[in-house]
Length: 94
Image (cartoon, rainbow, N blue to C red; front, side):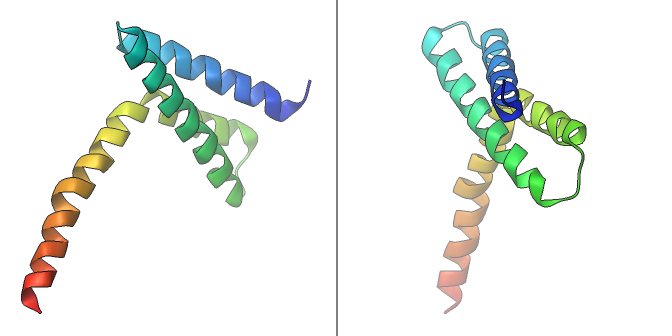
């Protein structure tokens, strides 16, 4: 089997398992699994720009998949609160 397909299946399994542990409802688990899988694949390909071994990239990607929801919530809160306040204050200074 293709090596990248094996990695994708592993990331998908990890995303599904972490979503099942976190959420009791089906919809919440599916949304969290999709979010974790997407963030995992994107981070795995972004980490390929540095000269890291596949094991290190997989480790970082696994950690990102496990913490996908808290990471997403933190980024969303930063964008909605801090960035909006900063842009509004910059608009008022002009």
